[in-house]
Image (cartoon, rainbow over all chains, first blue to last red; front, top):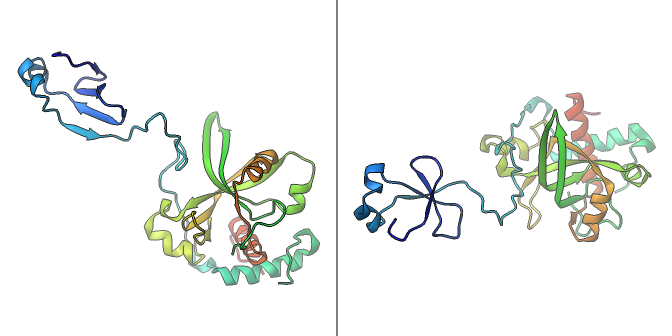
Length: 106
Length: 141
């Protein structure tokens, strides 16, 4: 290994142990090449970033397992801009009376 | 839509940052940490039982770009548009994600300064109208 430590995960994918970031991944050369000390010695590996989240980072958004893009149901015939929603919301609160208890005074 | 300062007490329409919700849904555990808005009415929150209802607040850019204009103009049934209030970006309340949460979680968030903003009375009235529309598929009034 020419002094280099490596861990093989699946064939042809190699997580580098020489960097602090677990997001750093290197691909291996083809087996015939990677066993060739000349190729290893040159260290001409192809590097690319993955979506692996470093362990020290606690993801907040999007939540784990949730879709990154939310489905939005648009229905313009039921559209209410903010002012219209305020007007209708106050009307609704008045009809519901104290049960809704929205202050209508201001 | 938002008051310049927090209401004195935890109130309907308050937005809390960094709230964790863990649920088991159909045997699958879901975990969310992020902003939520309190949906339960003030008098419901003051009652002695343990839980309150909250909904997720998501950044606008988590929705498809093609829907941003409709969210901003109130045409999206499951979304209530929230203008940016630094440091929170333009966002929306996602009514498809309503959760039951122990009130103590919100009380603790309040104590440690994660109660971020309170809604105006207009904001609360609008939220009521949008909630009605979401459940009734009709406009109130």
